[in-house]
Image 1 (cartoon, helix red, strand yellow):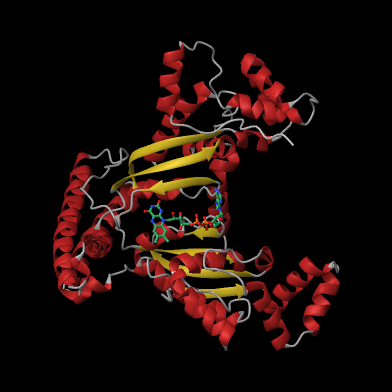
Image 2 (image 1 turned 120 degrees about the vertical axis):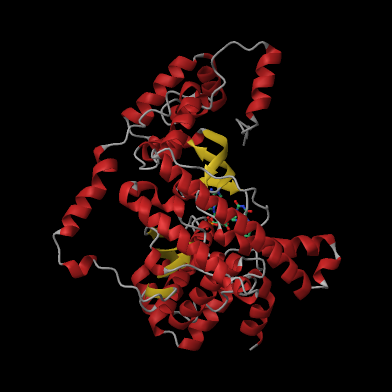
Length: 487
Ligand SMILES: Cc1cc2nc3c(=O)[nH]c(=O)nc-3n(C[C@H](O)[C@H](O)[C@H](O)COP(=O)(O)OP(=O)(O)OC[C@H]3O[C@@H](n4cnc5c(N)ncnc54)[C@H](O)[C@@H]3O)c2cc1C
């Protein structure tokens, strides 16, 4: 066996420094050479180290080879070997929602729970009417002032409520975090943030195409920045960034088709139930048992299913317990759990969605924000008698939203706040549900998403009790294990 460390991502400033120190001239400091050499592995019998060396020496040839293999032959996964890191700053939370929809990238963002906001926000360039811009700036000024006043009131209230906690520096920081996380419900989606993003060239190209077709100029501008940075460095792997007619024309076609149907189809229903479980794999517990039997017995799937169906409930329970018995809170449940699927429909605040969207192993269909769904008021705001103030800000935000909607519909959501709501259809398998509940029904989770997670857990337990027997937040893991295994 021979294992060679062929590459790793390092800070671009170090790369520039090294190039300067070495007086480096050749145009071969690019991740393209890695993609190109791995692309050649399938056809070239030479040692891979030799193939990489050739790609470094003859970079133009390597680029041609990338173009032929990735784009000519459609072997696009080769582009995944080239990875980029970006610092993205001065971007709105609304734009971040679009960017973080990409599941095959990694993100770490400034938290509005841990970092006190400084009032920075974007006024979208689409608002070319000076009066609208002034109105937006004045609205966000008021939202931000309210944020600071709510933060003071809430931290004072929480300091009094938890005197023992604030005796240590860490405890005080935690309590201040609770004040920040609730005060931020009043701030706009135009609020600026920053995040780090790591992404491979294949996903990046897809991102750039989608960014170019975005109705938000902020996203289009981001796409241009990224393209102008990455294309000169890696021209052969970031190539097709023009949106296709499929990217740009689909939505309108679907909307036109839907408009022909009965009005009832298009009229939204507002039952306001925050978490609904729409569907679960039929006979979920038996399906999981069949998957476990299949995995460990060597029987074909039809026979595994027959065996699972012949088990008593007690036997099924025993089998699933065997799979879970030595699990610790940090262990993933096994892949067989992926055979059970849940489809939830959620109504979530923007704050809640900001966290929900980070769960990349789920499929999420996200509707636009809808003021008819109302807004989420943090309990601490009610407890401290700040509801009228909070509601007043929501009303002002919505008044401006309706005004913008008439003339600049694409940017109306910048007027909304972290408290405004949308619907999300979330499909996830039992393996991802275990992970989601472990993080989000945990004592460290933010209360809003924790409420969502708790209800998802309750509904899953009702419909698939054996599959869900050890669903629990990390903080409740040992108690849950005791209950399941010592009963
Ligand atoms: C209490 C708390 C505080 C948080 N604070 C912050 C914060 O301040 N800033 C911030 O940006 N985020 C924060 N997050 C979000 C967190 O970093 C994760 O993005 C989020 O919880 C999703 O978790 P995940 O990536 O494990 O899961 P998913 O995306 O749901 O993925 C499920 C699992 O698949 C695997 N997986 C998925 N993608 C990859 C990949 N690319 N490479 C390797 N394995 C992968 C992993 O095993 C992962 O656990 C916080 C989360 C919690 C619970």
